[in-house]
Image (tube, rainbow, N blue to C red):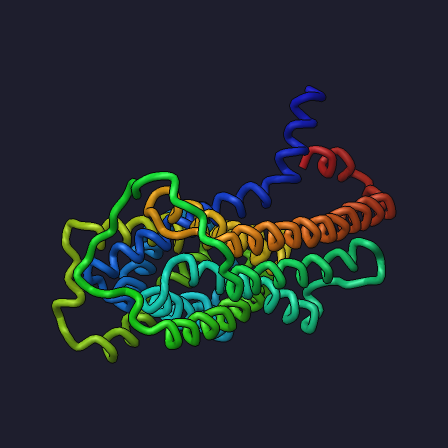
Length: 357
């Protein structure tokens, strides 16, 4: 029993970390599936719309039945807040992201995503969602964020020598349109995405306090964000043929990203945001950059620069510094809960009920 209890305690402690690593694996394949689909001719705006509507349909039964007792009443003010969150986290931000991916490359967009962590940390501190003090752990949060940002800048600005490919590409992505059309435009769109995404992580931490039902919030974000994207797409795309999806990479891309990324991973992020805060979630973004670069190097035969490896290692060092600093918050929370429990006196007649509840 003691061994099981110890394993259970360890799993509970590292569960958010494992879930976030899993989410970064999910984002890694998203980049390549999306690039292949865009090369095949899929319109990015139509893709965002279909992807989130699929996610909403898939998540709805889980949210309806599993959170029937937990789900709070949805007021007009709360619905408007969820609509704004959906705009920042789904329709606006992802349309910006996938258009930038169309104009640049998976490695570049994954690199730019890493700036979200620093922006989120700054906003969280300003809004007092992140505690800072003069302790060693408090300083580790600041140093870790700065070190991670340095790593991101190295990955973005420093190329370095190119590593030789170990062999021929295992996968060849072919298509009829050119992806790398405009790097300047793609870079601007990627920066705009990073800003909106950082605002989304902050806002979802605030919304979760009023609507602490992660499955239901995931479903609402997908339905509302999909509807918003549909309106935007209808204004931008005037060819009915663009809405047609065949039994090909476009369909598999929509299903994978809808079920896994917009469904499961958004739910994971909401859960981890409630448990650890918005900064914790965003600090795992550098892992996706490394995963994308390595997969592109080994599977697709893309060039891998030493600057990407060096920057990735530095970014991960910064990640671990910040995570070590945030462990202090976890310890303080446990100590605070134990103190509050020790101060409470058991009520007469309810002592046994409190023990077994």
